[in-house]
Amino acid sequence: MSEVNETQASPELIEQVRNEMSQSGLSQNDAAKQIDIKNTTISQWLRGIYPGDNDKVNEKVACWLSACAERRGSIASMPAPPAWVETPTAKKISATFSYAQMAGVMGIVYGGAGVGKTVTSKHYAKSYPNVWHVELMADAGGKLECAREICEVMGLTATGNASQLRRDIVSHAKGSLGLLIIDEAQFLKPLSLEMMRGIWRQAGIGVVLVGNEVVYAQLTGGQRAASFAQLFSRISKKQRLNKPLKGDVFKLADAWNVQGKKERDLLWNIANKNGALRSLTEVLRLASMYAADEVLSGKFINAAWQELGGMQ
Ligand SMILES: Nc1ncnc2c1ncn2[C@@H]1O[C@H](COP(=O)(O)OP(=O)(O)OP(=O)(O)O)[C@@H](O)[C@H]1O
Ligand SMILES: [Mg+2]
Image (cartoon, rainbow, N blue to C red; front, side, top):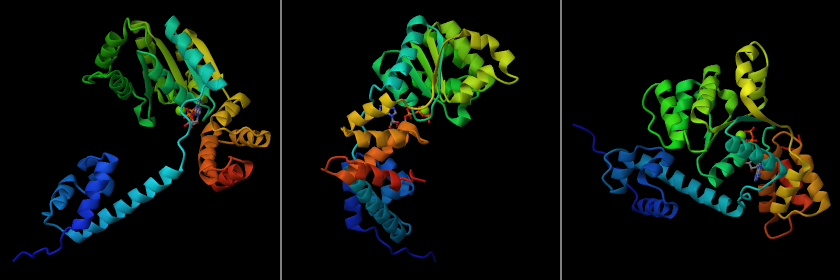
């Protein structure tokens, strides 16, 4: 005889889960993923007809609900970072995009981790029509993966091999006066770099490769230099970024309303460490949470920097 499972779904928890889903605008599927149970399980549990171990589900759900409450509490007290700020570095990056787009040429923006290459690429792509920002992952540097990523950003159905996808991309982009921004371009494999050149030449759009120093080294150094000489000679605009500029830090300080000289010097000091404007923004977010309604003074900035491990 099979064992009867006598555990039951908790009605209070069911109600709380329904509230949480409607407050956060979560679908049942999303909630199931966050709770880490199957969609069918949550569906049956919510209706009180789950035939399995309800105690176990109740426990998982309770744990999720308390994590949701905690997250909501910390997000509420953590101020959002300012939207994109037109820093001097951001202006340089945007100028390269704009030139590449207008002249229909290839460009590279490289170097400087955390100086705003990605946020500026995203901002530019949002501000102009026919600008496609593709952020590559380390495992998407091959021709097919890369073409698929571009298709997705362009809203194209990606079916077929890399050559077919390249043709689809070219026919979509041709005549658009557009710009293709390939972010994290250091992940492009040699044949994918060649494909970029093909897309640029056939579609007549601007193409900008954005990434770290490796992007430049790949095109100029080592054994590959000879094979990339032709590609490199096609790159009209090369924008190297190093560390953040003082003007970048002060623009962000303005956005956070930090005006004191001592505080601004401290921020400049922080931005010069690893992480650049990324760490600076994290420190400022935490510092303003500490400051609450008080002025964002040096003591809060230092405390946040220490808390985030920046003093080491
Ligand atoms: N112009 C800006 N306006 C607002 N915030 C900025 C700006 N530039 C940088 N930041 C802050 O710095 C963080 C890092 O920026 P971003 O991710 O664009 O750096 P990156 O140059 O792409 O770095 P990586 O080389 O590591 O990819 C952003 O998430 C943002 O918080
Ligand atoms: Mg980036």
